[in-house]
Length: 119
Image (tube, rainbow, N blue to C red):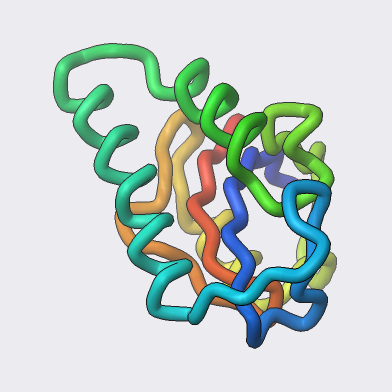
């Protein structure tokens, strides 16, 4: 069994690698990272609730704001199977139906994520 997801990652000072293509040194707190992610999540759920397609907006937000190098692919991590990602990320990814996104931020050692399952 494999899934393909996009994600938007916001790192914080306590992340395992607190730097990214966006910032050489990330100093925000985990609480600030969570608040930022919740702001993006609100935009995505609002679009979804208006009947708009979520994936193009997700791709745009991830491209601009994700602290992961996958930002250059709109957050697309490609396909992966079990035991390839950190457990909370894997569990959330496999629990989603294709075309849906996490309702709450997903916290890992990397930071705070929103996940959108492509397939």
